[in-house]
Amino acid sequence: MGNIGIGFDIMGLAIEKPGDEVIARKSDTPGIHITKITGAQGKLPLEAKLNTAGVAVQRLLDHLGESNRGIELEIHKKMPINSGLGSSAASAAAATLAVSELLRTGLSKRQLLPFAWEGEKIASGGQQGDNIVPSLLGGINLIRDNATMDIHRLHVPRGVYVVVVHPQMEIGTREARALLSPTVPMEIHIRHNANLAAFILGMFNGDLGLVGRSLKDEVVEPQRAVLIPGFYAVKEAAMNAGALGCSISGAGPSVFALCGNSLIAENAGAAMQKAFAQYKLESQLYVSPVNQEGAVIC
Image: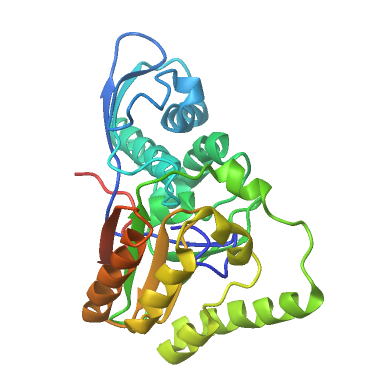
């Protein structure tokens, strides 16, 4: 879940589901071959150099000095595409870890991050790490600098739950990014910086009241809300149910809420789905604590 509202392009968190699965096998045929993609309705390329998973694995093989090594990948998409949930990053993270395990590289997930990041770049059109970092490493992450991968993990207070509601529609990341103005009024810039700093402080201090007061995006959310029918009604429903804060997940259309416990999260999720239904949008609900593990071998 990229951005976390106030952390555009610099913060992201991992939830427990949905998630992609990638199966990796050695092959006698040189090169990377994506043999199967399920759950994508034919929207993703089998050609490795055009697929985030394929590119990530190729970068890993290049690093290992085994560029022509034969690898077969099966990608099982269990995440909605163009949902604002980091679907492309999930495939890249899973494939990188799977192939590293297959080849017994001994590399840590932090060492694998540059290769997974290269795969994610072909989908995002840039070097933003707010999706790929939590997808691979888990947790809530602050990316101070994308170019140098200066990454810092945030503390998550006990009891915090994440609600994500995905309406049955798609918004392309590049489309959503094209809407954004390159300028921010000074007074909004000041308030936004104060909220971002206070959100991080609240997380480390376990001050959920401060977290809630700070989770207010005055920069990106107002520009992208027009892409999501009923967004403000959904946000109001979450807040009325007791959520700490609510905003757009990634580029949308998924909407997230942070909550102080699982009961509030369940109630907020149900209210958010009901609000979307009033705009004739069916939706999927995901409720989980912050996923501290990221990509795993199973």
